[in-house]
Length: 169
Image (cartoon, rainbow, N blue to C red; front, side, top):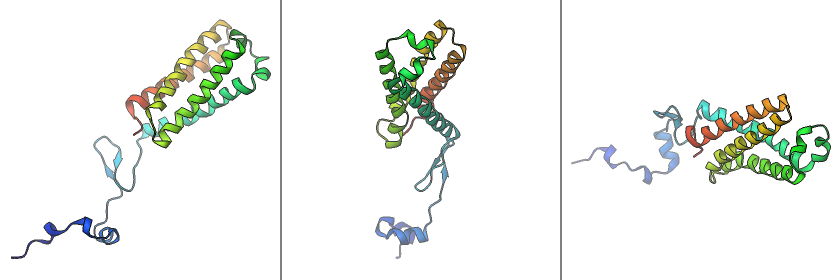
């Protein structure tokens, strides 16, 4: 008696080109969570896209701020009274922290090496923004206070998003 063909078929024994020609795989399969899964294409969620955009903007802003605090401090500090709140070495350390966190916002997720560091870096930058809120309030610098508040809230949201909402796999 002859067995049905579908029970004998083993895709591991068929060369991949023949298997794909006779049994095409779907490009995208939607998962119950709204994301896409599949072997060929993965469609990111809108929240993931938003978090990546925020990460890119944060890298640009905090990277520029870190470079300014480490390398261009003498030029910039003349015009801003709040730079007198801390000694020069403290500003250099804060600039290095900003540069390290800027790298940690992107590299761990891109390299798939300890991607939770992305959320931790965002949390550190949010805490740093709280420190700057105090400095700017002391010197009554309203625009800088508002900027620090907005950046702090964005970094807190980014930390929450990367640690809880949409962790990088």
